[in-house]
Amino acid sequence: MAAFIPLFATAPGSLVPLLLLPVGAAMFVVAVVFGALVNALVIGWCARAPRRGRDHHGPVS
Image 1 (tube, rainbow, N blue to C red):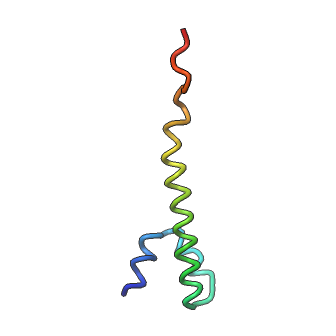
Image 2: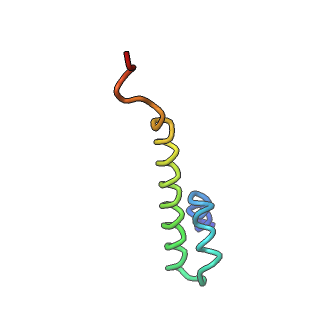
Image 3: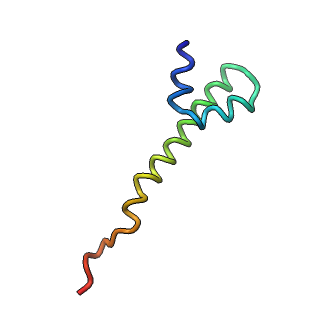
């Protein structure tokens, strides 16, 4: 039951390699790490998205 918590925390990125790769403890770790990296990239992109349209030099007079 404890194996489901890391999988659900890193889903959906961890489910793709878990379903495609052979079963084993090493593949479980690879799936969780891959899912964590995908989630970090998505969260980083979402955090930067609102700042892209902002003018950093202030208003133009």
